[in-house]
Length: 432
Image (cartoon, rainbow, N blue to C red; front, side, top):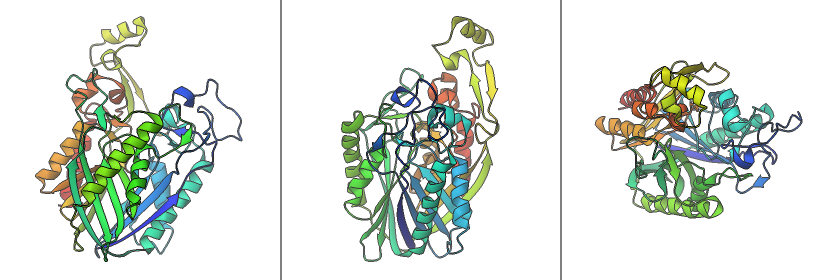
């Protein structure tokens, strides 16, 4: 096994809006129509709490080579991923195949806005797309991948998991017919990568927690609780990468704003370091990568009385109810609003496997994907969400009809969750 790692600061200039929340102090009362400012619907940022980073890890076992890229952003659109891949592919010295690049967003709600070209995200949480904001970031991300690839050297690797409770809760309580606040995926997974001399090279953390501790009134760039944890981990050596898990219905439970970030980051970081210390590394890990582009079908908003629940004018609610519990109004989303094709990837690392999901799966789907990994014989299954695309939420069929935010943001129909879990299982089977 060989490995290389690199970090790049991709923090945009102050004034670029933050991406992640579309309400509170973030939302302007009136649009800013000045063409020389990078914001329109959302307020300009006012500072930097901590840097927005891109981190690239390249692994090579002599047969396959993969790049895992983590970004401190709300979500990585397919356009962003394509541009990263295109600019990396243009560098003849980089040995990673384009389809073997996995780009993961951390899902911080205090990352840069104006970087998604999809109208759905522009209106909901990101503000209008600004190429002048995204382009410099793309160049730095591509440079980080190239530097990680160029730094490949002998390495040892190991994977382990444990349970981590007390810092997350389920946010669909009262909406879901079955979930309680303890309905979470509590598995913390860590990939430990050491140099040949046993010094730390990199640590990959996989855990389901959204970066929403800093609320909508925060106007400073931040990697939120995941960035705080990563800085603690890096004090012990190496580069810390964070890949989010099945957090589509999860909320952090560590307090709010500054105190919550510090407390949550410390709890997560300490748990990662404790688990990392138990991992035995080896230099002969088998590496396999199986990507495939999947068409999830035409995206749409499906509005019914049952799924919308309260908040509708009586006349509209009565009309929707007259159509039946599961019938209503369907609003198609065209290619300018939301993608429909996404690259699903499975990466085998020894006896463990990574399954990527191009959106925000709820915890139940994450557990289903992990069960499929166990059935295939893998000792650990890591679900990397918000990877190679941001298709919004992915729920089970039962939760789809239960309604609420996560259900309404499931844009590919009631079978979305089933389809996503099946594609992950197929990809994992391909690297078994």
